[in-house]
Image (cartoon, rainbow, N blue to C red; front, side, top):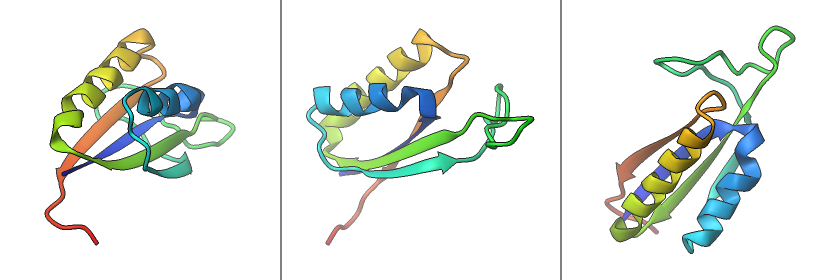
Length: 97
């Protein structure tokens, strides 16, 4: 099992949820109004007058064989509009209850 954390501009919220639905990924945890700044490029997303945009984040736990399809979908969404921004991070899950 793998945990995938997807952090993205809130403008992509419907697209990210549609992506999960299309891949048959049902379970997730969702955070709204996540602040941050990309490590390579991109403006800060702080929800302020100067930096008004914000991010959302979704974390899901999936079988190993779904990870590559999920990452491919994230890459496609990122290429669609690189200025908006989306990133995915993957961790191995050793145990779950």
